[in-house]
Image 1 (cartoon, one colour):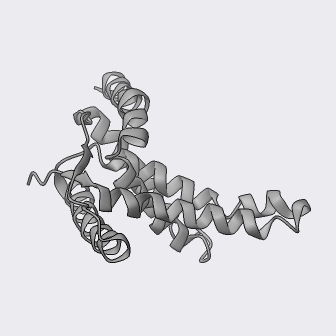
Image 2 (image 1 turned 60 degrees about the vertical axis):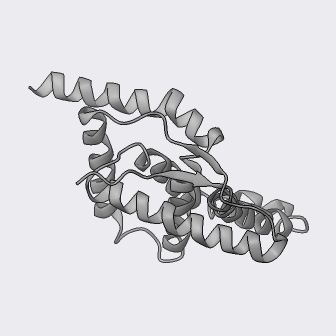
Length: 174
């Protein structure tokens, strides 16, 4: 099964950027008066950042259930963002912002699958309050993983490291 994640439209980029913008803005405004509690508030952004990281890495696979899920998230994100932008600004949103240029190798997919297993295994002990932030982070990461900014950073640094770690793991075991 080969379902590519596709391309990111400006509408999808809007959704991918809107999620962390919403959380960071709420964090910043909440801590204008309570500057002493800023470290406590940062803990609320960690699940969001972890989700963005996982979602960004997940866009590098184009097949299987994870590839299908990233394609579906991209499709829905593009549609929802385009509808929101068209309704709010009346502008054109179907311009393709970017598609992912780097893919995980088989060994890199092994690393992605091990990270997925770790997340699923730890899901019960993740605090209930953090789970929605992680979900939203994954959606944002999938959409931003196709953007030039986060996607470019992942293509340049994270994806080669995942491929290298996978190759090292396979080479040391096989």
